Length: 242
Image 1 (tube, one colour):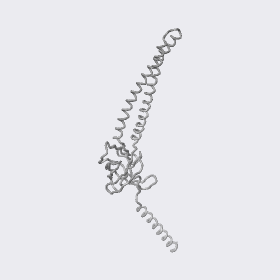
Image 2: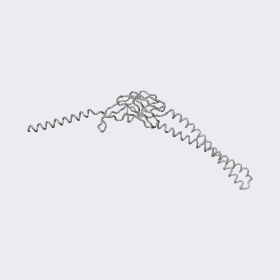
Image 3: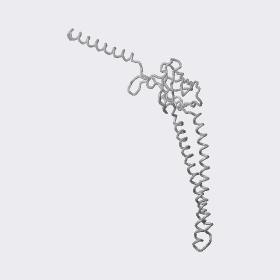
Image 4: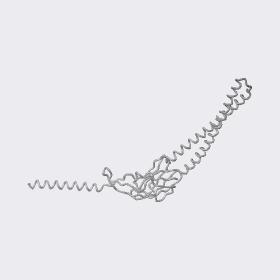
């Protein structure tokens, strides 16, 4: 092989190695991306739910009372109608029970008027009951209006405009814990959680940072618990009551 060809091959080899080294350097410099810097959180307004349940329980008892009255009135009306039929048959056969028939007919009219009043009152109470049951459903769905969530360590705050049933708690992927202040109406609730951060390659061979193994360290919320212990963020929900 001529010295010219050897020199050409050597230059190509050096060029290839240089490009390969540059590619490796670029790959090493790539910062891992964050898979999802948040975890789901469910808010239950337990104080409001308890208050609404007291109302619906009271209305439910009232509706049962109305049902009993309506059934009693309907039974009495049926008896009077039967009596009127008997008196009418007697009159047809020559009996002298006209005054009795008139009295029974008047009583039926009065009874039906009372039944109409009771049924209207029952429908009003039933409409109110349905409205409060709907409110119960909204509360139990986790629908709540959050004003803001502030990271107490770095001061970063996220504000919100609308109510929602699906909330995400922002995580600090530069740390293994986050301490936040959550403003709901005029109240501020503190929540501090810890988690493990893991750097892995996803199905597309992208290097990502994910959070898992969540723990509730401290909170002002009532009855806090996790839906899954030791799970990653996508499979974990934090449940809290206020």
